[in-house]
Image (cartoon, rainbow, N blue to C red; front, side):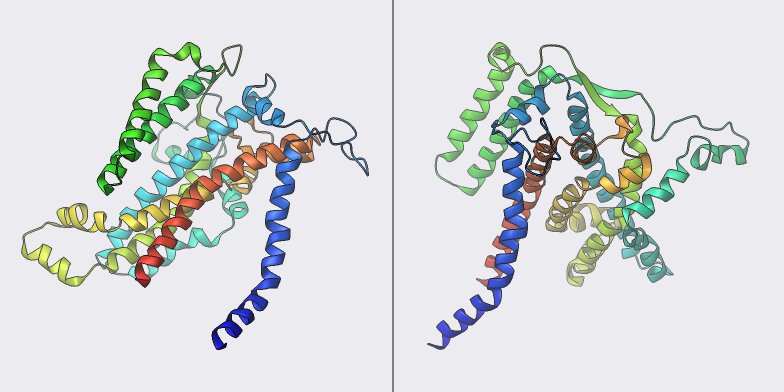
Length: 373
């Protein structure tokens, strides 16, 4: 009876929070999904009782293949580059700073505070600072003048140049190759875990899709009737620099905690075996930081999808070259009053965030269960 009473008390205590979360989080998510499948915004969007007709996945189809939605597709490409460079840059600089501090330099506490300070700033504040620093006629561009060199002319936030270009018409083929690669990697992982014959199914599916991408391009769907070129716009470099500057201290703190958590016996054994500083960190310390690295990748990937305020502060909402889906969602919803299409962009961002968050939650849960056993 005591156990049942405790369980009932726990349910009663948690019930208000569960109801509020169900209503104001998952209820609103469900409503956003529904709105994204209507045509709200086509007729009298701001009316007291607006007309909403169910159109299914039409808004999603328009975003990915509609003639007038090329900006969304470029913004989506920008979001991928933002995520990649924010994660890669923050990990590299964070690990470098953590290794420097792990060697106990003089003034270590002071440097830790300096490196962590950017994390305490909001994106609006840091975005405003970096907007001044990256101004075309000031800031970083005029630094060479002080040593007798000509002023830089690079437009950090408004460059029109694009590199690593690709044709959006090839996106179905690219996705087929990506899925085939994922299946092949999963087959090797399953084989290593000894999970029956599942690896054969995954490997066969991966090889089939790979061959389909090479020889069966004509059987893949056509997303656009005309060529549409996208790529890495150099106007995003300034925003990437600001984001990496702000979050390198965060990854530094994670890696430094991991380095300090390595057993002293292991460190001393490596020293006795003649390992140099480089060999110790590369062959021993860094591999032991794999769980921390995975957590950092997932968290930073999620953060990279939420840099609306940084981009807004640095470039404003109308800079197409440095755009992001979250910024376009704001413009589509609150300027164009196309609530259905804005909701569709929000759902796409939600799915992208879930791709990173759900594996993190699963791995955390599995780690907790393993620790309990």
